[in-house]
Amino acid sequence: MEDVCTNFTPDVAWRQILGLNLEKSEISLLQKAAHEWISGLLSFRFLLLPGKQNTKPGRAQAYLRSVINKKIDGLNSTGPDGSTLSAMLFAKDEFDGR
Image 1 (tube, rainbow, N blue to C red):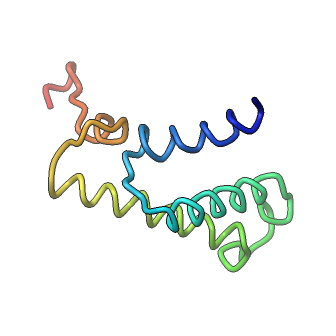
Image 2 (cartoon, rainbow, N blue to C red; image 1 turned 90 degrees about the vertical axis):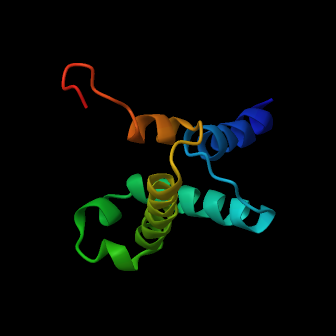
């Protein structure tokens, strides 16, 4: 059951929340990057020292950001797609009138 939950959580994150359509090779790359980035968050060395963009967690974070920014750029050009990220991007503030 632990393995099912461990595999299900990232699957929900990249499919439902981010709305990514990834190929098999990209899935493992995304999961590896997420694992490396999270490992870095648990490291004081990564969090406190300069030059973290040159570390494994720093490169993983840059990769994850690039994937998400690419998705946001795609949403801006094509419009909403039903993902949670899309809903957040195109949400309207009732009080602001936007």
